[in-house]
Amino acid sequence: PPRASLRLEDDSPRLNGASLAAAAAATRVNAWTEWGTLREVVVGDAHNAHFPPRSPALRPAINREGGQCFLEPDGSVVEAEGIGALLERSVGWPAGRKAQRTIDAANQQLDNLAAVLRRRGIAVRRPSGGVDWSAPIKTPFFDAPNQYCATCPRDIVATIGNVVLEASMSRRDRYFEVYQYRDMIREIWRADPAMLWKAAPKPSCADRMYNSEWWDLRTEERYAQMRNYSFCITNEEPIFDAADIMRCGKDIFVQLSMTANAAGIEWLARELAPSGVRVHTLRFPYDLAPSHLDCTFVPLRPGLVLTNPERPIAEEDAATFAAAGWRFLDAPQPTNPSRPWASQSSKWLSMNVLSLSPRVVVAEEQEVALHRLLEAEGFEVVKVPFRAVYEFGGSLHCATWDLARDDCCEDFFP
Ligand code: ABU
Image (cartoon, rainbow, N blue to C red; front, side, top):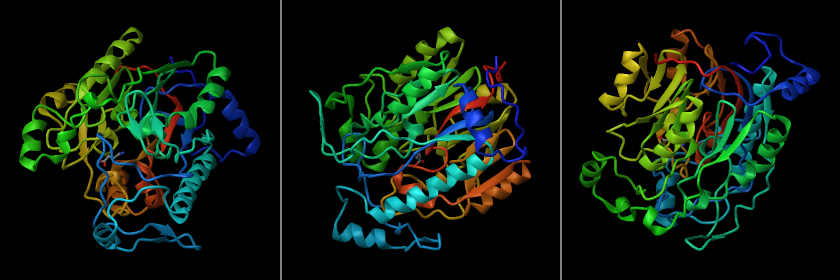
């Protein structure tokens, strides 16, 4: 049954500090869907972020069309086109800490998102783990010269009902990223006696876990491998990033990708079966480098999924949705497809939205075509600037992790 007892409507008066504190104290871990009315959420931060190093699960590359993404003192974003091409010729992929100006710009937009959510009565937590991303990692199985950042909690931890589940993670440099959120998880676990705290088996991240020649395949060879959904990770050990999961009540959907393998999806299915949750694999046969579902397939409310027109779902996987009367709504082409030169994400960050309820969605402020589409579907669209966060791993869905929504383990696929 739904556990959240707060009954605030989306258009309820804004809460003052005292009511916010009460709301936070009353919240319990509960999130079964992507769209239940949001009560408590975590917003990531970009502090001390480093460039991700080259590794068997990631070949970082400069986005040649990309520009810089800094904030001016008046809050406007500077996006100078073409710097990517210049950098590619002169330095190639950099190492070390990102520029403070870049980090500050991202943090300013993350802080603004947190403030917007708080003004709507949603309790917001921020990470405080203090992981030193410059520290190298050495285990018996691999080395990494430095770590990355914790801007995108969505990638590393998922709430499924009353379970907080730490993902295994696919990349070496992200192996310890969850520690940025560990104090927070422990605090919530202590306060909520019904919360279950689980972690997927930590993979070795040894060489055998990766298909490193995959990166060097020609496009047509990649297409050939892709027909078997074979990517840069092997199926040796269960692997998934939390952002490959989408929750629809009793059913959760997990993308077979560069960041989640069949063994990882099988692990999730077995783990969640006792609680009655059905786990489904989703495949997107035209996505050459699938990673994280939230730029591809975004459930918005019961019966409606925002889909990526360039990444159609496999017919056999679409059948589950068709049989239950769901509708796919193709996202428009991004209004502003440009990303910073160091962004490793696609232009489809445009559809990486955060749902506040089945009627309210937060979207990036420049994505006007998407706003129009969602408004025509009856959504209120909350518009926030977020492009300075794009090079830190994602947009609004990626940079958040919902702890409490008003929803339950409902069957939307009877
Ligand atoms: N972390 C989301 C990135 C997905 C994409 O680039 O399409």
